[in-house]
Length: 87
Image (cartoon, rainbow, N blue to C red; front, side):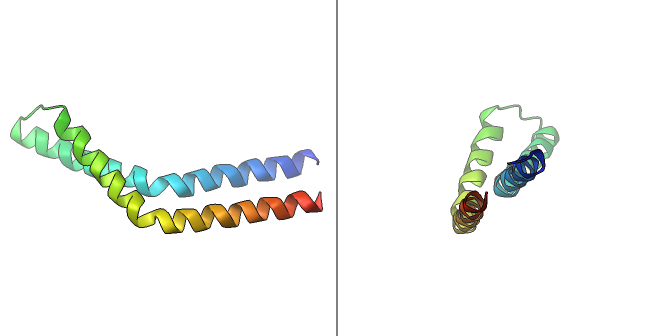
């Protein structure tokens, strides 16, 4: 295995991590901004008000995107195993 091949697979791995984590991270970011605006508008500074909705949103997004994530990981692992056999 040369350096180009290893860098290619590191790049593919990082891209897979970004693709798999972005739905949950975007949901937490959007809901966090909405809660922050609500807290600023109402002057409520309760810490649990920001954590509980974000955790619930992440769980809901993971529940609905689990099939996509699983299929993406399976395809990625198949590509890795095929690449291993060709080295």
